[in-house]
Image (cartoon, rainbow, N blue to C red; front, side, top):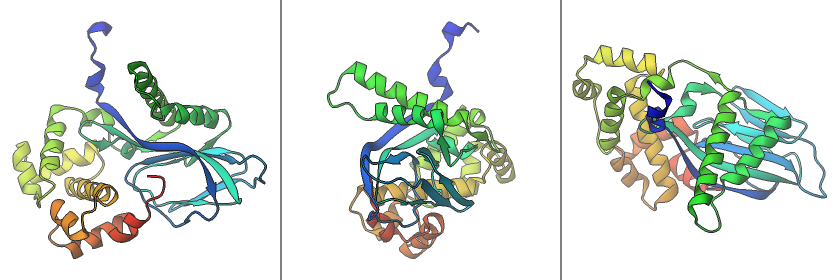
Length: 278
């Protein structure tokens, strides 16, 4: 096939820039462990005229520290806590959804470094600044911002390790049809037998295909999709926990709260209150 006949949209990689800024961060900012349904990038550096003792982050797999300014990369659903080592520092940050196909987290397939320093960190910092929404709309400004977002993702993936599954395999009509079916039916319980019937497979064959391509079972994928939707509702609507439970297919608010607590390490109401930088 000729290069000129390639359709770049066929690769199915999408980026949604949610919010971001360059922000002075005081040590009084709540310092609780957090678990968010999107990718967080933040370049931390000393504020002018203040001391600098480094920056750190605590994650389930360990504690990380950088004595120099660094860019921290936190993938979706990773419990983390940034360490405030100084009275004040400057954070150049952005919240992103990196997806492939029908809203599947691209970061699910990669092990990203918790932080990068040196020249690479400076590159990420400058790209984060370019990703900010333009003050005034123009097609050129929008294209420049989107270009910076894709370059930022390329830089992140360059220093990441591919895990189980294959992001290339999930972008095809088979998986996209299943993802869309699940998405359209998040407001009610969807059984694995029902999804298998929709896909024209036995339940065991569906399980094998999911685990080979995505690295998780279809049941786990459905649960993640429901909880991800619930997390967005908690942050962006005034719906009660009971209403959100009903809207995302949980049997009752107790079942929803228990599943949410396991995933985000805090109950839904606390998650809603911890609305920092979003």
